[in-house]
Length: 280
Image 1: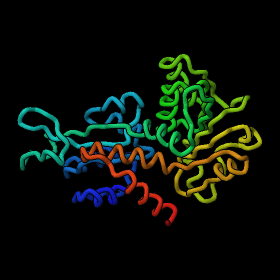
Image 2: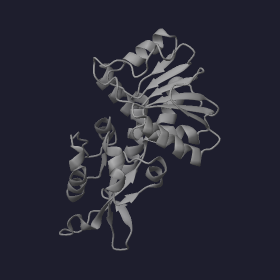
Image 3: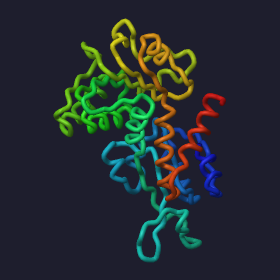
């Protein structure tokens, strides 16, 4: 989607995918800084690790506790930090006049995707969230900030869900919280786990322990495969469903704007995603 957007705007840029072991993340970020990249996107498990690696955090990263976008910036003669595409440090400066600025574009993207793809308005909603990793934590905090009425957190490691619940109680005391499957019906189920990425993965939700039938909508952040076991079960139960393509689009478009300073051509980016994921 980024390369399609660069082409649409006539930018001589290129977006590349690189696999980095978590233990090498700091070196990878420093290497990109030294090579004067415009920026980076980070995916799991790097989003939490990067909080302690980048040089400065945007308010979005501080608020939602994860970094999924980095912009590299150089300091001009007046001491102003500018995005590298607008400012190239003098030859010989090396990486010392460059900083890594961390942002989070996931939080706003999930709200936009839920509204656009499922017609869900979050204020007053009852929500079951599966997963408490980097994107799960960000989602939980964002849902609470949107004034959901109830938020039920489920995670394989219960202590992690409990830690997020404690954090939400401090920041958003009006939200009714529970850790574990709810005993009553919810309106929205969100999967923020990685279960479903592999073709033979089952659903992250045990259908015998919790019925999807009363739920109005189910959102799975996984976008490849286009339909996970959870979404198949949700369709069978009569729920409205959507995968993570919309969230991927909106977080990517925001990252594009952070790097380039230009409005993202979202229609172009969506078409590129659909062609890549669905083949049409």
